[in-house]
Length: 269
Ligand SMILES: [Mg+2]
Image 1 (cartoon, helix red, strand yellow):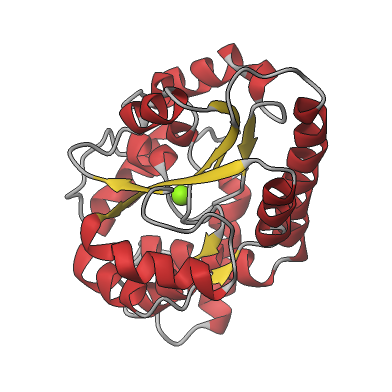
Image 2 (cartoon, rainbow, N blue to C red):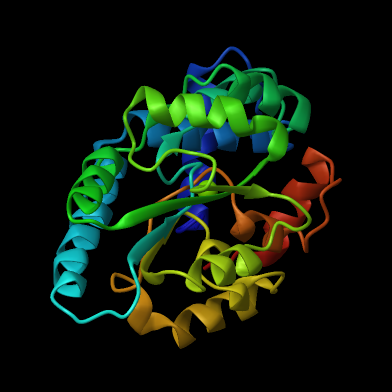
């Protein structure tokens, strides 16, 4: 997802050297909070780039087009859409900004402080799409790796916007595992899942889980025909399994170590 790496890294250095008072990047030696600066840059993209908004609208427009097609087909079970929550229908970029401005990345304590507020805004296009799907009789299942302690605040946040089917039976939080495979299977016992929506390819299929960078790319090629069909992907430039794969699923690397790893995987000209 860090698409043209060289351009982005160069952009970060230029932008944050010029504009921010919270990070200190020199041209000589990467600062340890380069990663925090990158995250701030990506959060700014999520909040302020019209292109991000357009990509979200594009995704949900395609989803609605596909939904209308699926509604024309015969089905033996009630129809359902399985959707992720964070960076798919709720926008947590203010959390990312808050952490980045302190030179920090995600941590579970501050994350819970943020979700307890139940104040995340919606991802562009999401609410309209899910309300449309519900108006057509399609049930929505919210399958998220938020944990059980976040149940009340998550319901509260979604209910504030009148997302449909927001109740305990349609909210599938993380329990024993972050994998969504078992929760997907449990929905399939009673419903025909016509579409899955998420910002993380793990939201779609267990085939993407715990893979190396190259294997994730290869698996994406393998499922190419599903994107924009049964799999609808929402852009998330700030975090995700792509980032974990960059760091070989080591979650305790320092910013400096992350910076070093990044420089080993990007392609220079
Ligand atoms: Mg997500």
